[in-house]
Image (cartoon, rainbow, N blue to C red):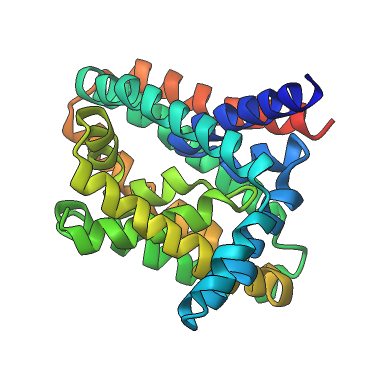
Length: 281
C-alpha cells in the first residue's frame, strides 16, 4: 500500500511536469524541483548512462542487461507515464486554441515566455557587465532563429530530431521552458498537431531525439551551469527574449483585437510570477 501511494504521488508529479512542458514559459524541471524529485530524477538519468548505455555502446550487452535492475524504475515508470498522459491530453486542447484563438493564445504564450526570461536572468548572478555580451548574443541568435523561413517552415525528420534533443534539455532545467524553445524553433505547433493526430513517425523521431538529448546534451548543459552559470543563464535569457519574435509575428498576422491580446499577455506574464511566488514559499 505504501509503495502504491508513493508511485501514485510520483505519477501526479509526472502529470504536473507534463502539463508544464506543454505550456511555453513553464518548465517541467521547475516542477520537479519544487516537488522534491529533481535530484533523484537527475541521478536516475545519470544511472541510465553509467549502468546501461556505457556498457551497451562498448558491446558489453550482458553486463548492460544485468545492470538494468539498478535503474530507479520506481521513479521513472510512474513519472514517465504521468508525463506522457499529460502531454497527449493537453495536445488536443493546445491545438484547438492555436486553431480557433490564434492571437490570444500566442499573446498568453508571449507573456509566459517574457516573465520566464525575467526569472531565468535572476539566476545569472549580479555580474551584469560580464553577462550583457552573452545576453546580447542570445538575443540575436533567438531573433534570427525565430525569423520566418528558418526552422519554422522545415518539419523534416532531422529537424524534428534536433528539436526533440534541444527541447528536452530545456525541459529538465529549472526555469527554462522546453516548449518555449520549440516555439523559438517554430516546431511547437507542429509537434502539438502531430501528438493530437498521432503521427507516429514524427512522434517517434521526436522522442528519439529527446532521449539522445537528455542522455548526452544534458551533461554539457550541466557542465556549463556548474562552471559558467552566469553567462549561460544570460545567453538563455537572451535566447528566450529573441524567440518572442515568433509569437509576436503570429499575433500580428492574425489581425487581432488589441485589448484581448494585451489582457491575455498580461495574464500570462502574471501567471509565472504567481507560480514563482507560490513555489518559492
